[in-house]
Amino acid sequence: MIIFSLIICAVLSFIFFVYIENKPLSNTLTAVAVIGLLTSIFFMVKNDHDHLGMHNVTTTSSRTIYSASPSKQLPMMVYQPIGTANKHQVYVYKTSATAKKTTHTSAKVTTKNVIKRTTGENRIVTKKVYREYKNGMSSFWFGLSGNGHQYVKETNTIYINQNWTVLSAAQAKKLQKLTSSKSYQAKQKAAAMTYVKQQVMAAMTKNPTMSAAEQKKVTQQATAAYQAQAMKQLIAQVKK
Image (cartoon, rainbow, N blue to C red; front, top):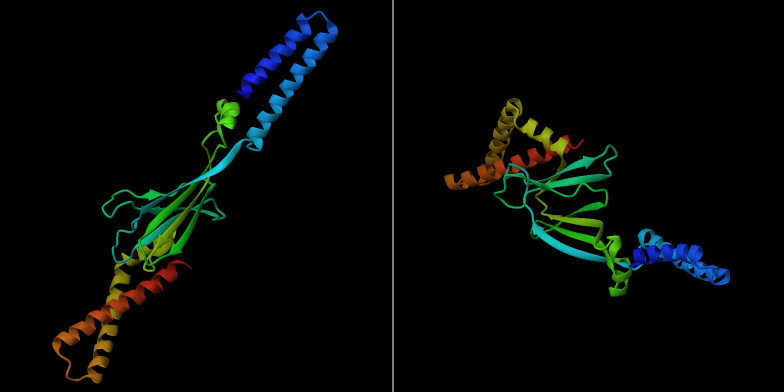
């Protein structure tokens, strides 16, 4: 409506100034129309620049997320830095355990991503802020300007378990390259055998009467412990 008000005042100011022969009356009416015109312009600028008649409304949504890593033993949250300063990142994940394609957070500079550790479900909680008209009167006056339901910003709080690793896309690629290396695999296999053998021998020294089942259990535990420690060291290496 404010647009119509501006147009009407502009037209009236022209008509009053040109077509009314009574100059005092013409000047008075023209002045009133010009004031209306300037007032309309003032409120249009206030609405556009200072968001007059608007207020912020927040919507919240939540979804379960799954690791984008191909390894079930190494769940991972991968992010891609935007720009060279690494002040903004896009986080990559899957929306289901069987999804073939990955999804990522918005690359807009108005998007903020926060990583938090949780013991609960891995999920992403998104809060989006929009500008809406405060009331019907605001909608009546400024509705034609098209700035209702205007996106402002969003915050993604990403809750992931302690066993998830957070790496950049470059770090994840480097990690994959290292773990798939035949020389690394051979080295780790030899080191793992040595470590497991030492652990089994130490356990048997404490309990010489260990059964085969007990030895197998110690072997499995030692193998898992070595693999976890080796991966932890490798991740620390790619993060340097």
